[in-house]
Length: 254
Image (cartoon, rainbow, N blue to C red):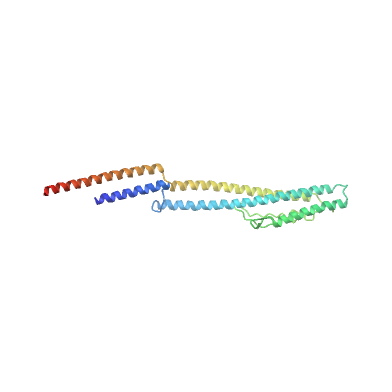
């Protein structure tokens, strides 16, 4: 009788655990369920968290590069306007006063370029004055300098002798910078996609370790329920037999 009670208790405890696993869809709920599996799963969880953080950092780098490219586009338009004014000023029908007016606009554009170079920031970080930028997902540090000095047009003046090729060189330099920004953007995209693949594989592997094999678990539950029912029937039969034997013994004494 005592042994049957212990067996029934263990059986019912197993059923309770199976119900818990099925309802939570997790095979591993405590370290006791699978110590080795839990350790591997937690390691994968840590790796997944690091990947998500890395992707967030790369998204920030991507936003920074998009900001840089927006300023580059603005400066490119400024340089194109300077070239247009220079070509206009080279027309022989323009007087010195006319060229001075055109140069006044050129000087304003150059001043705006320098202002952009010094003031452009991303999250408080200067991004166009030559500051070294360590971008996630990009193998080499980057620095972008858009000052008129770096572009070689500080002294460009159409009221004096000038060479239009200086503006062409500045535009070419700017295009080269934009190409570098584009390459860095593609590198980040590639790194992010690679991280996404790794993350999905980790999630899949972690799921295989942690999640319940529902079909197998339901089958085990049914088997335990059958054992439990059979045990209860046997216990009831045993109690009836004991009662019957006791009654017979009592009748014999009487």
